[in-house]
Structure formats: structure tokens, C-alpha cells
Image (tube, rainbow, N blue to C red; front, side):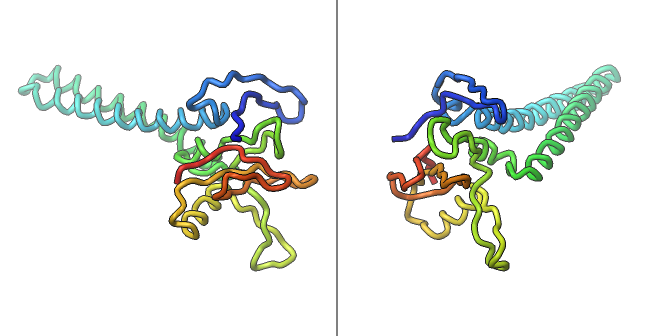
Length: 197
């Protein structure tokens, strides 16, 4: 059975916030919902940016030489470009920070910011944290394979499978996120969600 997140534990405090299960976006965690909201916000911003730019251009074209209408059209275009540019710079900084921290690109935030159920193995672990695997170039070392990397690899090796189950696993102190094509948990693991490929 797939568990829905209804709690959020604040790391390091022992405090657990009970979040109602609204369904939709919030079934995958509050941070996943925020990631999805940011993705939609940037898409809407681009639409608004284009719309206001076209409106300003239309004002200039339909002015028939009236200097006030031309001025108003240019002001609209300048204002939109300046405002959107500020937001895009902010968004680029947030994106670079997120990529540096391992959360991934903005279009992956809704998936990568999902968390393991607080009542199961690897409680509260974010999907983007993935799992540690042996480093092929250094037998003594380990590399972190992110959730996005696992999904990409799974798609390549299993092209016929259309649904994948995300496992939250815990073995002593080691916590990990894994994938399986079978709706069955393994020892120390619990199915947390299912993903349509």
C-alpha cells in the first residue's frame, strides 16, 4: 500500500507537524507542492511577459504616430522587461543554489522534493538525496546516485515498464531512495509512491 504524507518532521527538533492530506499536490509533501507551484509560476510568468510585450507592441503600432501612445507602449514594454528580468535573475540564483545542493533543475523539483513517509523507513528523507553506490572508478569510494539519475537509468534499462514504485529504505544508519518495477516492498524498505514513466 502506498502511504500518503500527513506529517512533516522538522529536522533536528523532534517536532512533527500534522499536515492534512488534501490530495493532489500535497499528497507528495509540502515541499513537492512548493516545487510544483514554482514551476507553474515560471510558466505563467513567461506567458504574462509575452502577453504584455505584445500589448505594448500593439499600442505602438496602433498609435498612428501619436507620441503619447508610443510613449505608453514603450513604457509598458520597458516595465515588463525590467520586472521580469528581476524575477528571472532571482529564479536563476535559486536554480543554481538548488542544483548545487542536489535538488536538481526547477522542472524536477516537484518530484525531487517528495519525502519518505514519517511513519516508515528513511522517514523524512527527500527523494533528491537518492542512494550511495560503489564508485566504479574507485572501489574504496562511493558516489551518490540521485533520484533523477535513477529514473533516467531505469527508463533506459526498462523501456517497456510504464510505472515505477519508489522505495524508501533504511538499513541501520544508511537511508536510501530506490526504484522497483514491482509493487512489493523489500526487507527494510517500504513503497512510498508510484511514478508514471
